[in-house]
Length: 171
Image 1 (cartoon, rainbow, N blue to C red):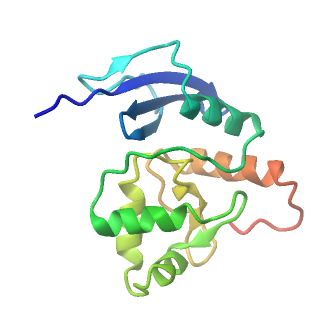
Image 2: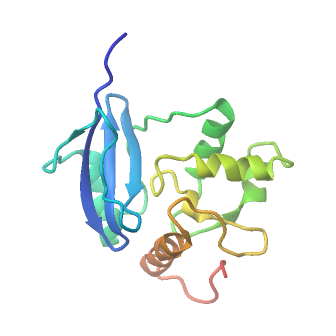
């Protein structure tokens, strides 16, 4: 069995430190620092504070408001259903939101709204696989593994960069 190589680094952003991890297939993890926990790599990962990968470049550009769409190889690791949901998330345009129910309809599983929420919760590559763009059917911000304040900050960032006017789609 081959040993998997995962290299990671941390970058600063308007939501705090963000850990970026990559393996031989592509971007594997984007993780936000939460509370007092430091942004540490998982056991066995190699930390490189000088990592200058394309994923790092694109994420830094996103946080600066210079990038709206990612073009990166991804190392998705989920069930077939989860990966179907994540691929549907990739089609949500920058600065826009859709409901969990809409994603369920788009993947041909209109009754799987809760399962879509569960798949969002298992997404290890937030921002790039934009689970933050999913809102409740009422327009309320719901469910985000790193907390609703980070989700709201990401949506506000995209709203401002998109120069949208009028009422926001979320409450």
